Amino acid sequence: MTHHHNSNKDFKVTDDELLQSFLYNKIHNKPLPDYMTILEYDLFGTVKNPCEIWEEFAAFHSYSGKDLYFFSTLKKKSATSTRMDRTIGTGSWEGENSGKSVFAKNTNQLLGIKKRYRFEKSKMDSDGGWILHEYILDQSLISNPSASNYVLCRFRKNLKLDTQNTGTRINQQSNSNKNSRTKNVGQNKQRKTVVTPCAATTTTITGISR
Image (cartoon, rainbow, N blue to C red; front, side, top):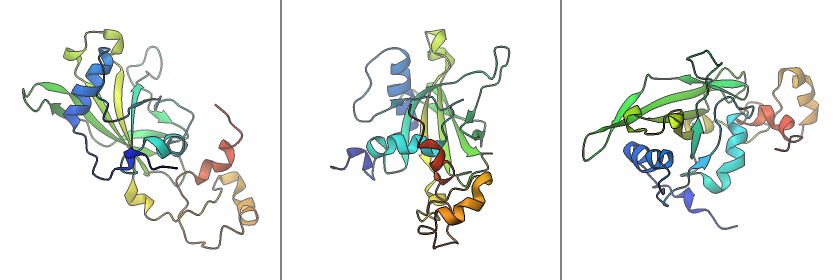
Protein backbone atom coordinates (compact mmCIF):
# COMPACT_ATOMS: atom_id res chain seq x y z
CA MET A 1 0.00 0.00 0.00
CA THR A 2 1.39 3.39 -0.91
CA HIS A 3 1.75 5.90 1.88
CA HIS A 4 -0.85 8.64 1.83
CA HIS A 5 0.42 12.18 1.29
CA ASN A 6 -1.22 13.23 4.53
CA SER A 7 1.60 11.64 6.52
CA ASN A 8 3.78 14.62 5.54
CA LYS A 9 5.59 15.62 8.72
CA ASP A 10 5.96 19.24 7.70
CA PHE A 11 2.27 19.83 7.00
CA LYS A 12 1.01 23.00 8.66
CA VAL A 13 -2.18 24.95 8.23
CA THR A 14 -2.84 28.22 10.05
CA ASP A 15 -5.86 29.08 12.20
CA ASP A 16 -6.93 31.88 9.85
CA GLU A 17 -6.73 29.53 6.84
CA LEU A 18 -8.97 27.01 8.57
CA LEU A 19 -11.57 29.66 9.35
CA GLN A 20 -11.37 31.73 6.16
CA SER A 21 -10.51 29.26 3.41
CA PHE A 22 -12.31 26.21 4.77
CA LEU A 23 -15.09 26.89 7.29
CA TYR A 24 -16.27 30.16 5.69
CA ASN A 25 -16.29 28.60 2.23
CA LYS A 26 -18.01 25.44 3.46
CA ILE A 27 -20.80 27.39 5.18
CA HIS A 28 -21.31 29.57 2.09
CA ASN A 29 -21.16 26.69 -0.41
CA LYS A 30 -17.96 27.91 -2.03
CA PRO A 31 -15.24 25.57 -3.32
CA LEU A 32 -12.68 24.46 -0.74
CA PRO A 33 -8.91 24.46 -1.34
CA ASP A 34 -7.73 21.05 -2.46
CA TYR A 35 -4.47 20.85 -0.48
CA MET A 36 -6.05 19.10 2.49
CA THR A 37 -8.97 16.79 3.31
CA ILE A 38 -11.62 17.80 5.82
CA LEU A 39 -14.08 14.99 6.53
CA GLU A 40 -17.74 15.29 7.55
CA TYR A 41 -18.29 13.60 10.90
CA ASP A 42 -20.22 14.10 14.11
CA LEU A 43 -17.79 14.51 17.01
CA PHE A 44 -20.44 15.51 19.55
CA GLY A 45 -23.08 13.24 21.07
CA THR A 46 -21.72 10.25 19.18
CA VAL A 47 -21.52 6.73 20.64
CA LYS A 48 -18.04 6.14 19.19
CA ASN A 49 -14.98 6.80 21.31
CA PRO A 50 -12.17 8.93 19.86
CA CYS A 51 -9.95 5.88 19.36
CA GLU A 52 -12.60 4.22 17.16
CA ILE A 53 -12.93 7.37 15.06
CA TRP A 54 -9.14 7.52 14.75
CA GLU A 55 -8.93 3.88 13.65
CA GLU A 56 -11.65 4.46 11.07
CA PHE A 57 -10.03 7.43 9.33
CA ALA A 58 -6.36 7.79 10.28
CA ALA A 59 -4.83 5.42 7.75
CA PHE A 60 -5.84 7.59 4.79
CA HIS A 61 -6.67 11.00 6.19
CA SER A 62 -4.35 11.84 9.08
CA TYR A 63 -1.77 14.59 8.85
CA SER A 64 1.68 14.09 10.43
CA GLY A 65 0.26 10.90 11.97
CA LYS A 66 -1.54 12.89 14.66
CA ASP A 67 -4.25 15.14 13.17
CA LEU A 68 -7.60 14.55 11.48
CA TYR A 69 -9.83 17.43 10.33
CA PHE A 70 -13.62 17.32 10.46
CA PHE A 71 -16.60 19.54 9.77
CA SER A 72 -19.07 18.89 12.58
CA THR A 73 -22.31 20.30 13.98
CA LEU A 74 -22.78 21.46 17.56
CA LYS A 75 -26.01 20.21 19.14
CA LYS A 76 -27.82 21.51 22.20
CA LYS A 77 -28.19 19.20 25.20
CA SER A 78 -31.97 19.62 24.90
CA ALA A 79 -34.46 21.79 23.02
CA THR A 80 -34.59 24.31 25.84
CA SER A 81 -30.91 24.19 26.84
CA THR A 82 -28.36 26.81 25.85
CA ARG A 83 -25.52 24.37 26.56
CA MET A 84 -24.00 22.24 23.83
CA ASP A 85 -23.72 18.47 24.02
CA ARG A 86 -20.03 17.65 24.27
CA THR A 87 -20.24 13.95 25.03
CA ILE A 88 -18.29 11.51 22.88
CA GLY A 89 -18.31 7.74 23.42
CA THR A 90 -18.00 6.96 27.11
CA GLY A 91 -16.45 10.37 27.93
CA SER A 92 -16.75 14.01 27.00
CA TRP A 93 -14.81 16.92 25.57
CA GLU A 94 -13.76 19.04 28.55
CA GLY A 95 -12.88 22.66 27.79
CA GLU A 96 -9.29 23.70 28.47
CA ASN A 97 -9.72 27.39 27.65
CA SER A 98 -12.42 29.95 26.92
CA GLY A 99 -11.30 30.43 23.34
CA LYS A 100 -8.80 32.53 21.42
CA SER A 101 -9.84 35.12 18.82
CA VAL A 102 -8.45 34.50 15.33
CA PHE A 103 -7.89 37.42 12.95
CA ALA A 104 -7.28 37.54 9.21
CA LYS A 105 -3.58 38.07 8.47
CA ASN A 106 -4.00 40.86 5.94
CA THR A 107 -7.05 42.80 7.09
CA ASN A 108 -6.97 42.03 10.82
CA GLN A 109 -10.69 41.28 10.62
CA LEU A 110 -12.05 39.00 13.36
CA LEU A 111 -12.67 35.60 11.72
CA GLY A 112 -13.77 33.58 14.71
CA ILE A 113 -12.68 31.70 17.80
CA LYS A 114 -10.50 28.67 18.41
CA LYS A 115 -11.25 26.60 21.53
CA ARG A 116 -9.34 23.66 22.93
CA TYR A 117 -10.90 20.57 24.53
CA ARG A 118 -9.54 17.34 25.98
CA PHE A 119 -11.18 13.89 26.08
CA GLU A 120 -11.89 13.04 29.73
CA LYS A 121 -14.29 11.27 32.13
CA SER A 122 -14.38 8.05 30.14
CA LYS A 123 -12.79 5.89 32.88
CA MET A 124 -10.65 4.43 30.10
CA ASP A 125 -6.89 4.65 29.75
CA SER A 126 -7.40 7.03 26.83
CA ASP A 127 -8.49 9.85 29.15
CA GLY A 128 -6.36 12.82 28.15
CA GLY A 129 -5.23 11.00 25.01
CA TRP A 130 -7.23 13.09 22.55
CA ILE A 131 -7.36 16.84 21.96
CA LEU A 132 -9.96 18.80 19.99
CA HIS A 133 -9.36 22.26 18.51
CA GLU A 134 -12.76 23.69 17.65
CA TYR A 135 -12.98 26.56 15.15
CA ILE A 136 -16.15 28.68 15.21
CA LEU A 137 -16.76 31.30 12.53
CA ASP A 138 -17.74 34.74 13.85
CA GLN A 139 -21.52 35.28 13.59
CA SER A 140 -21.00 38.49 11.58
CA LEU A 141 -19.56 36.40 8.75
CA ILE A 142 -22.45 33.92 8.56
CA SER A 143 -25.21 34.85 6.14
CA ASN A 144 -27.12 31.61 6.70
CA PRO A 145 -28.36 31.43 10.34
CA SER A 146 -29.00 27.69 10.12
CA ALA A 147 -25.25 27.17 9.64
CA SER A 148 -24.26 28.98 12.84
CA ASN A 149 -23.67 25.70 14.72
CA TYR A 150 -21.33 24.36 12.04
CA VAL A 151 -17.72 24.08 13.22
CA LEU A 152 -14.37 22.87 11.94
CA CYS A 153 -12.44 20.57 14.27
CA ARG A 154 -8.84 19.48 14.44
CA PHE A 155 -9.02 16.07 16.10
CA ARG A 156 -5.58 15.43 17.55
CA LYS A 157 -3.92 12.38 19.01
CA ASN A 158 -2.02 13.42 22.12
CA LEU A 159 1.35 11.96 21.13
CA LYS A 160 2.89 12.80 24.51
CA LEU A 161 0.53 10.30 26.10
CA ASP A 162 0.92 7.85 23.24
CA THR A 163 4.67 7.44 23.76
CA GLN A 164 3.91 5.44 26.88
CA ASN A 165 1.73 2.99 24.96
CA THR A 166 3.64 0.10 23.49
CA GLY A 167 0.80 -1.58 21.68
CA THR A 168 -0.27 -4.08 24.31
CA ARG A 169 -3.98 -4.68 23.93
CA ILE A 170 -5.80 -5.55 27.12
CA ASN A 171 -9.52 -5.50 27.61
CA GLN A 172 -9.73 -3.06 30.49
CA GLN A 173 -13.48 -2.91 31.00
CA SER A 174 -14.26 -3.20 34.68
CA ASN A 175 -16.57 -6.17 34.31
CA SER A 176 -14.03 -8.28 32.46
CA ASN A 177 -10.79 -7.51 34.25
CA LYS A 178 -10.67 -11.03 35.63
CA ASN A 179 -11.04 -12.60 32.20
CA SER A 180 -8.40 -10.44 30.57
CA ARG A 181 -5.65 -12.26 32.40
CA THR A 182 -6.50 -15.57 30.83
CA LYS A 183 -7.77 -14.28 27.49
CA ASN A 184 -4.69 -12.31 26.55
CA VAL A 185 -1.90 -14.35 28.11
CA GLY A 186 0.12 -14.42 24.89
CA GLN A 187 -0.04 -10.70 24.33
CA ASN A 188 0.30 -9.71 27.92
CA LYS A 189 3.87 -10.44 28.88
CA GLN A 190 4.74 -6.82 29.55
CA ARG A 191 2.51 -6.21 32.53
CA LYS A 192 3.77 -2.69 33.17
CA THR A 193 2.77 -1.19 29.84
CA VAL A 194 -0.03 1.33 29.59
CA VAL A 195 -3.05 0.21 27.60
CA THR A 196 -3.38 1.67 24.10
CA PRO A 197 -6.12 4.27 23.72
CA CYS A 198 -8.52 1.91 21.99
CA ALA A 199 -7.93 -1.16 24.12
CA ALA A 200 -10.85 -0.55 26.42
CA THR A 201 -13.37 -0.78 23.60
CA THR A 202 -11.60 -3.21 21.27
CA THR A 203 -13.73 -6.21 22.13
CA THR A 204 -17.00 -4.35 21.97
CA ILE A 205 -16.57 -2.68 18.58
CA THR A 206 -15.98 -5.78 16.51
CA GLY A 207 -19.64 -6.82 16.50
CA ILE A 208 -20.94 -3.44 15.41
CA SER A 209 -21.17 -2.58 11.75
CA ARG A 210 -22.19 0.97 10.93
